[in-house]
Length: 449
Ligand SMILES: Cc1cc2nc3c(=O)[nH]c(=O)nc-3n(C[C@H](O)[C@H](O)[C@H](O)COP(=O)(O)OP(=O)(O)OC[C@H]3O[C@@H](n4cnc5c(N)ncnc54)[C@H](O)[C@@H]3O)c2cc1C
Image (cartoon, rainbow, N blue to C red; front, side):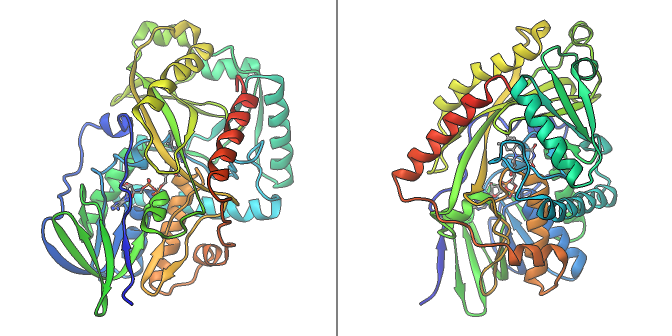
């Protein structure tokens, strides 16, 4: 029987993809309105899909590559995250980000750094603006005694991994952030802070310069095996490809692949309008910094400052579990006052500052924290399930899928080929009930963090 993969759901997001909205210019990418053939078709133009396309071009410059996205470029996860391209373990289901032990975490860190190196080379090669890719490091910020304890635990883990870090006290945290709210911090130097939509637009421009064909607002409704190739069908056209890479993160499940094993979380975020000089003076602190919460269920905060976007603060907090991948406007509306509260607790001197953008975005986790960077069947490969670390993990799974598609072995492709299978979720309604209960409990425990 001919195998056919039909998209049961297409991306459905709430609010504005702020990073994309702020860009002074966008690459002009058409919608697919015709039929053509190619060697490899990539579904999804996020971190994973763009990395897969670049890796394919690196391995074989003569390949004919097509990338299709359901949304406009930069409107999906790549334009909705907080822009931390993190090198160290970042297990969101843990209490302090430590993964399954320092041996595995050392491997993951080495791979994450390869992803950051790969992205950095792309930035140079494609002439992407340096302020879209800032190797600034990040701080794990604590705001309570419990957070300080989690930070001490994390520091112990970093010591076991032989990773450099700096312990910051409340005074140092205030000097950096201008906020008196933080009680301690752990600075690690390896994270790159992205303008993620600017990075994606630059990647797309470079890929097209080197011959790839990109199409946006072109959801793949289905793909099916025909003689010798796969036909991908969009509302106005089709692509016949010898190989297909699925780089759709959680929408892997929409195509019926690994369904029943994917946790679809939607995170909420907001970004202030440009702060004026008086507000910047009241705020104090340094021009650019990024803070992840010491408790993974806490609040991420980041300050940006450059001529293009001005000075702004981004606050990410709150989570909703949406097994149907369709967050509602009401969920975002409810999250807005929570984000405001977290922002004003940290920056009481900025109370009342308007939020220019509020949005939600999709994060796909597996129960056992593994990704899906493996062949699905002959000629179909996947670079999905980034477990909340999409900037680095998405880049890695994209590289792995490209290498697997061309039969090239590397530490990256071997790692994903050998990762254990995704664990199955409990049957419904127990999965939804269980996940929502755990999230409520974990958010309550995270408290002020
Ligand atoms: C508020 C928030 C903050 C975050 N912060 C961070 C952070 O700081 N660092 C970090 O590493 N991660 C962060 N994440 C997670 C990160 O955004 C994701 O893990 C990452 O975007 C996943 O990358 P991806 O390329 O796998 O998938 P995506 O970026 O989701 O890209 C998949 C693409 O596939 C497309 N697609 C889906 N279905 C179809 C279809 N049928 N046809 C065609 N195209 C389709 C989508 O439109 C989308 O553009 C955050 C997420 C949120 C929501």
